[in-house]
Image (cartoon, rainbow, N blue to C red):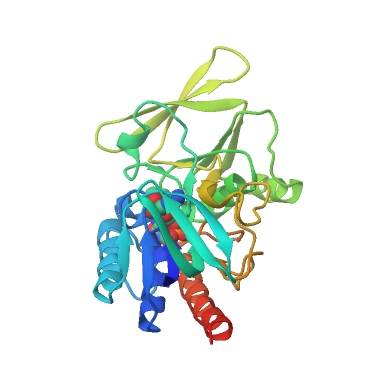
Length: 305
Ligand SMILES: Cc1cc2nc3c(=O)[nH]c(=O)nc-3n(C[C@H](O)[C@H](O)[C@H](O)COP(=O)(O)OP(=O)(O)OC[C@H]3O[C@@H](n4cnc5c(N)ncnc54)[C@H](O)[C@@H]3O)c2cc1C
């Protein structure tokens, strides 16, 4: 039986493994795809404290190697379910079989919802972004657009308005879904330009994004907007399917927990983007990884004397 099984080898899961191993625990990490999680494909990370500039791949590889060198075991397999309790031990099941642990750290992360239009993947990282906090600074003084109409989209637009020249907000309905106070604030900025009842229907450019095509949701009209960046803010989807009938989730599917990373099931902790939280970034994922691993270690100390 392992002391800790971590589900997900993103920033949160790998940090949890590092803290678990350094505390002398046996740790098995499950990863359904490749190590690193969302950051693996990011061209540049420039907001992680202490590291001026690094590619997502180098960042993820460094974390993975650090966890591996400490003796973390890895199972590259998709977890399909978790059962059990702290008293009898937890069973983690994947296609290859089952493993057992005293504690579980869920670090399954989340995915940004994509637009699903042509060339979206081609321009991802060279014009199309899913994170204004991460990438806004790369578009300093340039024109950009935000696609979405909820709180995140409006917050993104407000944030970008202080960095970028013009910020278009493209939303498919004729009014924003965001809180009215946020809408009022956004509309008070002269360089934020709403484009209501439109969707993004095309992406144009050679190597980088140069313009977008928007199509009306009310008639056949189309428009071209010249810009350098498009921030897609049409929602995130947590990847918590494998634990959805095991721990309590909120309405959107995030595992319910506060900053202590404790779930409603004793001995089960949650770290990173898959948890209910306000800021989903590498720093907060790493912080959760550390907190959840330390919590798992003290749970073991109290429960398995
Ligand atoms: C393009 C892009 C650029 C970004 N740039 C920045 C940036 O510059 N700075 C910044 O701070 N943040 C950035 N972010 C956000 C940052 O990547 C996330 O906040 C961070 O990756 C969250 O880490 P995590 O470990 O919680 O989740 P994730 O990175 O999502 O990792 C979760 C892992 O769990 C695995 N998994 C899920 N379900 C299962 C299962 N059932 N079985 C096994 N494995 C499973 C997934 O395959 C994945 O590898 C960016 C995000 C994107 C998409």
